[in-house]
Length: 390
Image 1 (cartoon, rainbow, N blue to C red):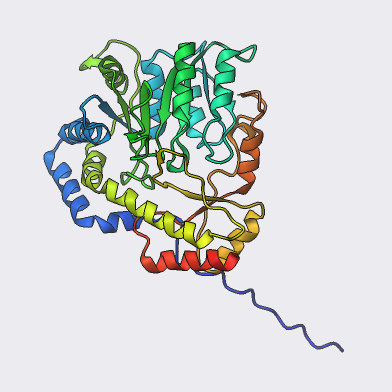
Image 2 (cartoon, rainbow, N blue to C red):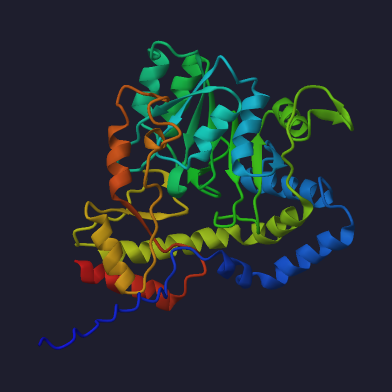
């Protein structure tokens, strides 16, 4: 008779001591300032489109461009920020908007929300941002069967600038509006000029994990065009310029006063937080030096703010598992290109490159822990694991 089989207990999962992101840490780091701001907003008795929102708009615009050229308009989220820009420009049905497939799906969702047709282009494999040459090619020779291209949404992904100079030149030559998607690029710059000041307008998400994040959803649009700013401000509240009277069709997309107060409390610390992100990225770069994994490429002349620190690893799952065993959390931004997702597969137009680099990147990208409140010990844990990988 065979002895009874001995049950083998499954080993407990590793404890993650270094999370990939931690919005709570950002709150705890500025708890006194945030709590005071929330209390001020609550005590005011005015909770929608009040003084907190107006002050945040002024302060954010001045932070973005101290010259005073920019106007800011708060809204409910980053998706609506893109919608407001497109609607403010009169872009909707009968228009094509070029953007990338390697982005949060919100970029493409916003284009379809206004009734426009998305055209998805490939990325530069080094920086993961739009291939400027492919944009120029489709503006010069648009794909057949699509409505006219009226705008391009340049996504400054992971905290790094797109190759804006040739993109702006190509858009100007074609009479196309260049819109900046700055959802991951608060404070990033190109040639010393902050992103969000190059195109006709820019959209920022204020989601809790962003470099500047609320404690809920929020968004803001910026533009140097005062008329466009006024149109977008009306559209965000039913098209009202006079209360209860809609001059044109609008939506309901308002940044509430409590979130605006939180953002005002956090804005003065944004530049220091971005500097800390670059410091952490430098430590990771040093740990990777001489190994088989390459550090992220930084565009020449660009100031990267490392919303994400992204590696490329052909054996991504194995790398994730090894880091998990060391207690290190990771994430994938983004595992499935927009054009390959069930909601879009087979029905969205692609540029001539067919998004080949996009599909390869989606199989290989891996985001390491990155937020300003990472402790020295946590950064050292990540660096030691990277050095062991060789």
